[in-house]
Length: 165
Image 1 (cartoon, rainbow, N blue to C red):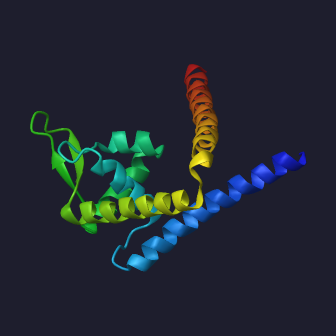
Image 2 (image 1 turned 90 degrees about the vertical axis):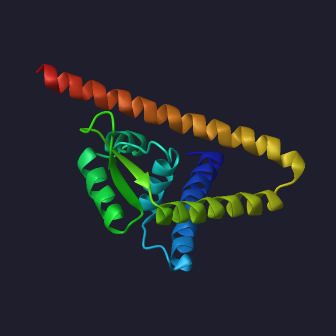
C-alpha cells in the first residue's frame, strides 16, 4: 500500500471508531437511556414513520439483520417501553412497531447528539473547505453503498444457487 492509501485507511478506520466511541459515550453520559447503539438505531428507524410504524421485516431489511434477531431486539425494546407492537386494523396478521413517548425521547436525544456533532465539525471547517469535504464524503458514501449492493447481489445469487442444487 502506498503512503496515501495507508494514511487514508488509517483515517477511515480511526474516524469510524471515533464516531462509535463518541456515540457510546453520549449514551453513557445521558445515564437515563438503557440502550445499546444498535437499539438506538432501531428506534431511530422505527421513529421515521410515527403514524404507521414499521414491520419487523422492514426493520430487518433496513438494518440488514435477520428476522429472529430483530424480533428478539424489538421484544426487549417493548419490555423497556421504548416501542410497542400494534396490530394492523385492516389485516390483523400484520404487526407494526411504533415508538412510545419514551422511544421518541430517546430518538430526540440521539438526533440532538448528531446535530451537535455536525455543528462542532462545521466550526472546525472553513467555508471554502466545506464543498470539497462534502464531495469527498459523498464519494466515500457512494463507494460503500456500491460495496453493500454488490455484497447483497452476491449473497442473493449464492442463495439462489443453493436453492437450485
